[in-house]
Image (cartoon, rainbow, N blue to C red; front, side, top):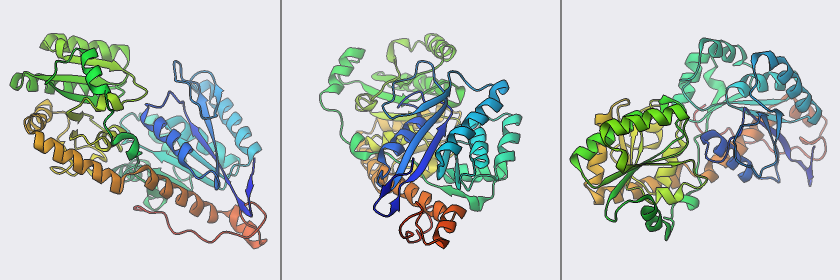
Length: 414
């Protein structure tokens, strides 16, 4: 599995994730972007999914599954054994885990296989955790070489709730390919409006979210839509993403009760959200909990003014009053008030959208995220026992050639 480029090693990295539904999942989409954009002359990535997601998209990046369905308690030991065999046989240099089950079983298997660098991910504030999850995550929390958080708020939550040493938690914010989003999709906005039955001259307020759980706050968005409609008659509302059937039914029933069904559009999951972002005049993030929102990144990269709840890492992304508005969570009234301000002020919408795009360009680009991640991987590996043993023998990380120079500490708060 090791490949040489000159005298240097391409570090073998195994990414382990519970499942991979498709490109438009937040964490899943970020992971696929990481694998595509890593410097393949220095890194040799592989991807393992613990199980295959039903109805998932076809992913062009090579990957393999250990099981056909989700890992249950009775199959825990079998999964751990299979992971240990896979990791041990390939002698990976780095194992990086995502999602709850992988952050437990993937970390344990990597430790048993004596992988020199283990990186665990924390990408939310743990709204989903039961007492059992907290106990297990706390039990394995000291094993990883590094825990990677996507916001400083996630770092604080992980240190407080799981007992992880803050010095072993590194923050690397999510990134986005600005060139992919910054241009409005020419010629599609008008056709989409016509297809969805939106009259010319009407304004559109939109949300991009996969709303499997109530934590996405879509019911507050519906409440805000009612308040906006009472003040402005020419506004439509879009929800782009997928949700469970019961969530859909509850939302649609509520819309009927409020008399909003004629002005609400559910697009379902979209492989490319850019045409819909080009329709939006205002983008909303009504979540009750967030680590570091990928949807918010996409809004800002597309040059959209945003109204977002002040939860998790949102305040690390949005500068309140400059690149968008932050409002208190669980308040339809607060969402509606700032949305109306933007809808009534086209000049403010344009200014905020432009400043949001520039903030992404400066602080949250895909290039910046990838470079920070590459630096972290190499720094952690060169500090590992395997690299130090090779250095004592006069070899580089690959066991041959000169050892690379030491890399600086990764950026971000540590």
